[in-house]
Image (cartoon, rainbow, N blue to C red; front, side):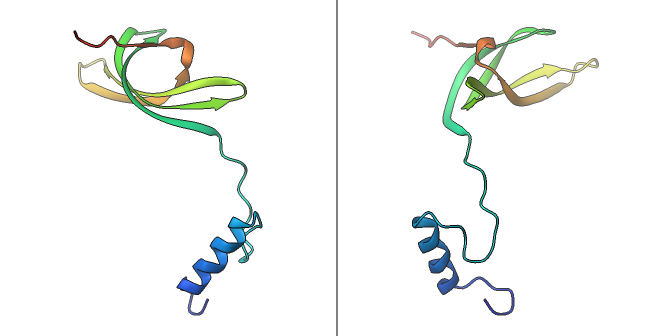
Length: 102
């Protein structure tokens, strides 16, 4: 690695070490194991304590501390009536699938 550039040889060394389960040969810290996540893009209903049930879009699932969380995006109106996009992880218990039209 000269001049701060990452070349093809460096990439091959890095990938070979990682394939063997070894840390990076360049001294980078080994990241913690990833949280189990699953992609999803589905319409859903999100129950919020303050705003009731809202239509939303389920973007993914994640298992954390033995429970499932869903990443959802939905729209709320601010006090003036302008839409605000909310995006976050919520417990699976507050999500319901939206029914498909017949």
